[in-house]
Amino acid sequence: MTQRLSARALGTVILAGLLLPGCRDVNVNTALAQLSQAQHLAGDLLAEFTRAADAANRAVMSESDAQSVTYAHEAEAAKQTVRKDIDALKPLLQDARYANEARLLQEFVTRFAEYEALDRRVLDLAVENTNLQAQRLSFGPAQAAADAFRDALGAAVPTAPAKDTWRVKAVAATAVAAVREIQALQAPHIADAEDANMAGLEQRMAAAEKAARSDLATLQTLVAPAARPRIADATSALDRFMGLNAQIVALSRRNTNVRSLALSLDQKRKLIGPCEESLRALRDGLSKHGYPVGR
Image (tube, rainbow, N blue to C red):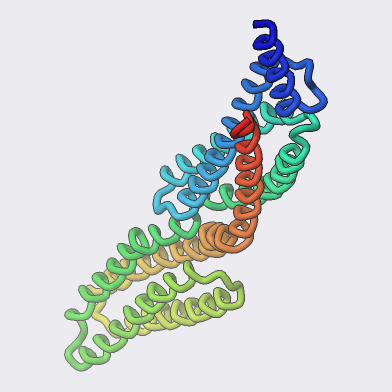
């Protein structure tokens, strides 16, 4: 019996030595509990970081303001969990036996700080949704104003004197075409990311507006006096349309959706991979610690 007890005691000492080099006076069960907690935190770190990145991507790709804000909040909550996991894991890796894992955690912390700074910019841009706002104005109120312009001119044409009927029709059609051209230019302006390209589109819009106003002035002299209120209605509709067009251009110029998408696809994507690489190495390194197999 004495021999068996001695052998058992010797086995415990050997096991403690294998598990806890330099710290043989530490309780084995406590050390293993700390290791288990560290392994759990490392796995949670990877899961929460991935969740934060995915939520941020959904915020960028969302087609509604409410969804963008919801996903941005989800991304922030996941990043907050990442920070808490880092704070909880650091003291568990202080022991020299986890020096490599401590280095990997610090590597992630450095990379995560760079990721966070860029992600904040991306999310701030994404929730503004200026390109989507511009698109909604273009397809909604601006479309309605352009249609009102067309309808007002359409009501004025039948009142023209017989000798001027075809000329009035031609000038009215040219005016409507000029407004439709501005409408057609709004979509590429909203989608474009280059200032020079947008400036060129704005110049074409200005030229089309000038042509439409010139046509209105011509029609004012051609239609019968009774139809001039219709020309006034068309002028008011054109003023509304151009006011909306100015808002569309201003929102499009901010380009928050285009810029946030570009940052996500380029710079942020390059940061996500290294962050996940550090976390996987940390998780895998901790998974190798524990009772030695076959001992």
